[in-house]
Image 1 (cartoon, rainbow, N blue to C red):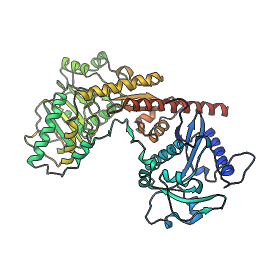
Image 2: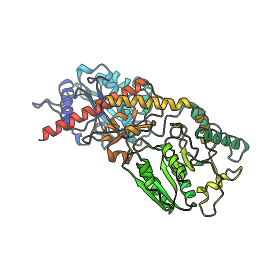
Image 3: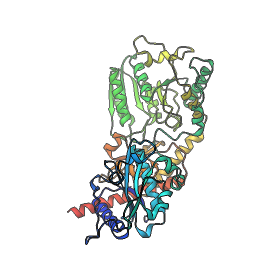
Image 4: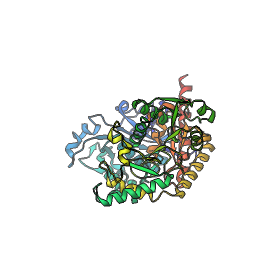
Amino acid sequence: MSKHEFFFKIATTADEFEQIHCLNYQTFSEEIPQHAKNKEQKLVDPFHAENTYIICVKDNEVIGMTAIRDNRPFSLDRKIGPVEQSLSFPVSSPCEVRLLSVKKEYRNGRVFLGLAQFLIKYCLKKGYDIAFISGTVRQLKLYSQLGFQPFAQLTGTDEALFQPMFLTKKTFDESIAGRILPPAIPFLPGPVQVSQKVMNALSKTPISHRSDQYKEKIAKAKDMLAKLVNSQYVHILLGSGTLANDVVAGQLSLETGRGLILSNGEFGSRLIAQANRFGLQFDVLQKDWGQAFTRDEIVSNILNTTSWIWAVHSETSSGMLNDLGLLKDISEQHQLKLCLDCISSLGAIETDLDGVFLATGVSGKAIRGLTGLSFVFHHHEVQPSLTLPKYLDLGTYMAKGSIPFSQSSNLLEALLAALEDVTSETFKKVMETHIFLKNQLKQFGFTIVSEQHSSPMILTIEIPPSISSALIGEILYNHGYQLHYESDYLQRRNWIQIACIDEYDKADLEKMVHLLNRVITYEQTATQQAIVNGS
């Protein structure tokens, strides 16, 4: 993306609002004589304080805009009465779109199209089911191309006539603007983009989890999972990764001796919390997020009473990949039972669990199945416990030929379909995407967290402290790129993450990184200008 290319965002700065008032005046006082002219050549909308403005920016100039508000009464309510009374169908969460305006020299369609596409994403995320607008009769064809449909009678004056119109997701999807809107590209660690093959498998007729057919299918899934990570046993649980880690905590509660939990991120902290809930006796080796553990640090925290270690393999929160070979070597040398959270690494990184006591994974991340199933891997025989809650007792699942609890055959079918596509080529593609993205980001000078030890499944970048990572994430989201930014632990550190576990065209990766750089550069400039103006 050229530095001169335009992009869309929600207006946030004083300078943007000043430009909005000027554009508002140019359009609705000079071009369309809806409002009187004035010496200041600015027109502040009467609903300005309630408006959210979507703007198009080029070279720090606002060249297009539209405004959204959801407070009633709408301006259209005042003209025709409650808008619902003029419709033949019910609405539950409406908003009003106003002030659609683009500078004359940029009315080639691209800016209007971009505003409409940004608008529909924004409205869907906010939960609006319909948007109303008063469209100037001079541009009815354009409004129609954007998906707006006319209703009710004309309003305004002979010099400035307006047609009440509405936009829904359905009318947008059927419009020219909707038909050419590219699908969103997810860069999330989960949920990921699910293939049509997996969705077709999900929609198969459900079967009983007690049937021979189901037993054959679950045996096949277990075999595929076990071979994927070189584990003798695996059990499939109906629940999230937290459930699988609770099962591990339950097994550790039956062990003698103390444990050592390694934590250098959010998910290491969660292991500590789960261990505390089970009343486990353990020590903690805590490091700053994204910092690697050294052999000396780990060994120095091993006591004579230490019998197990629990750690996260791929620490999603920072993009850190902890050294599995090092952990296995230390555990073997000190005769410790190694437990691993492999929730983010399973299916993304070639992983050998030989020598690992217990490990966990899930169906909905890099395996690219659907969220809802989790796994516990192990090599040893496990007997049922009389003290653990039955659903958390690994021994209950271990009983020969047992499927102890109800499960979803649909999720199992989806898992099988997804596992068929996890091959050595999958790991290669993840790594290639990771390397390509890292190089692209470094070209623009981005700071990558855990750069020397980053997990191939995700990249974490620091956003300059003067800019909100959530703001950047929102702009990219409304442009069709779903980056990982909404988690509290990321927003506290002002980080944004880009997962590498879907299939991407290099052109899309380049466009996303260029837009990310363009947006951050613009926001930095705007922030610096605001400081200068305020000083």
